[in-house]
Image (cartoon, rainbow, N blue to C red; front, top):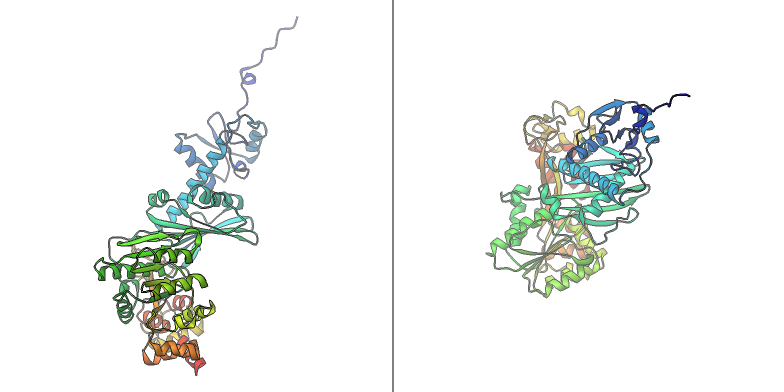
Length: 517
């Protein structure tokens, strides 16, 4: 009789299962399963060459937060695939557990990105699909650049990130993330406070292939008091605007591109107005959403994007001054002017590319010309842009490296900036100064400030925008954006390339005047 053949201990021991397999306790995306495998023996297998991959590192961080520090063993892709092939799908897992873990890891990764962006003093974070990748870029000092720690992720991971931001991190009217529709939201207050922000706006839009999301980061102001001069307004411009805040009547309209600092300037001006009247004014704001805290003002959100209805409601709340975040269309513009007509002071914004284009936009909106042609009603037209300021420790003299510039720009510098003797260029390498970031130290306002006279408004109404501008230059000695940015370049504060690309060409005034002539 043959002896019984007993199985060995190895044969009795079941093969290790992959906890990161589909349906497993630590399920990961299919792409990550091509890089790692976490076994129920407590060992983490990582494919050779993938140990420093950001998603492998993120997975290990997630385990570490749960108190797990498994030993890592590098292996071949074939071995990892073998473990997954013999690991059954866990059909009996608790519904939603794995999804919850994945969502938590995604939120953690997004928080790392936003926190890193805040450290760089970023104004906007962009997530956008590009072929099979989601690219991540940040805007610093007005310039877009790749987010260096993580410039791109697989497209499906990018989609998960955007969904996690919208559905898990935002206060939203529509709780469902819809990649094929534009959506707006803002990050929850608990989240922005934890990373030192005042707030963050979120906007999405479908692309031809994929989707994009932009997060606008709003920073808390320090205890230091901001002034118009500190923002970058010239003394003559600051004096004009300050005079506007000494009267609580009329409408004052800011213009400029998105991200040109209009909200910050309005905050400074409204704060100055409140202080000038010794906190005896009722100042009400309509914002979508409120961006910065204004001491002494009652700040309110616009409900359902109904600006006109919000303005009409605000007028019934006994305000002295109303700050309206934006005039978007005919009804909101008409309501803003009606508020000014009935004796309320109004401060607002309108998308236009110079002070006189504000009047043109109001005309395009079919507003009654009698309203925007009345100098007793229209008290201020202000355009502003932002331009990066050079680091004074590492800037490069123009005369040493003028060949870096395209010859037309270099020629304009020599013509309009005294030969370029005191002009400096941007040093992208930066220096050791803690305030220097790639050769730049923040941004400055470049502006055009118009205090309308009846002659100026009549010139616009009868002869058009160019005639109104000529009236402003001739009789009010207006300071143009070209004059302002040329002054900054001549003083060595702004790179001429930045000045021309972000504000206007140095010969902008000559072009306009020759056109008018």
